[in-house]
Length: 308
Image (cartoon, rainbow, N blue to C red):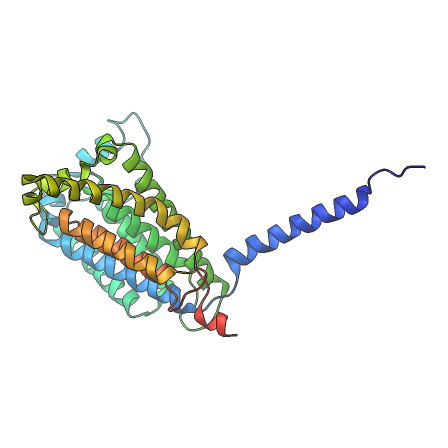
């Protein structure tokens, strides 16, 4: 008599595959790791927060103080669509426009960020920095942008790191969260570039160069000759290609250091033609510390683990 397929073996193999995938998923997120990467991410986030606070100081009272350009009632109306929606933006700076409250909160934020840079009481200073960053971002929603989005995300992730000296699952989790977030960021940047005709046509870089408000160097002379225009078009398409290729290759190749050098050149180029100091510097520093392990190997694996 002909025997049918062995369903027990088939179900056993299926369960083994499922268990293997679950183990790989758990290993990816929760494998104990050296605190080195988490400490570096913590320092990058703290320095970024200090940069944010220092750049804000000259205009803090002009924006948020008494008779400022962004009074609390205006912010509340805009964020709630004139009372039609519920706003989840919580900030005690919306309670008063007192200069004492503003400067006191700013000083507390500077002290907290300094403590985070020095790895002092990180279980306390990390959440405090995150909450204070949200306090300012929610008070000034009209003047926030990509820099604040990346900064607050990094400050949130470093709250999960429990130790600055010992191997732990929380250190590995912080590294993975930042790696996945940055991967998604590069994919989003690339897709947003593809959605704009100027990036397809090669003119996007020229429009950035033509903006004279914040650029670091003047490359407008490239538009005076045909070879210069070809160079601008090539640079535009190269920026798109790098943005889309990096989040894929960083996980699939062993040449991480080469990729990081390319992405460093990418962000330096963007900085020179746009003047986006904080955003370019923060994303570049975060990318480098999240994916660089000092040697060519898979992302997220510490050198010490490879030597074991």
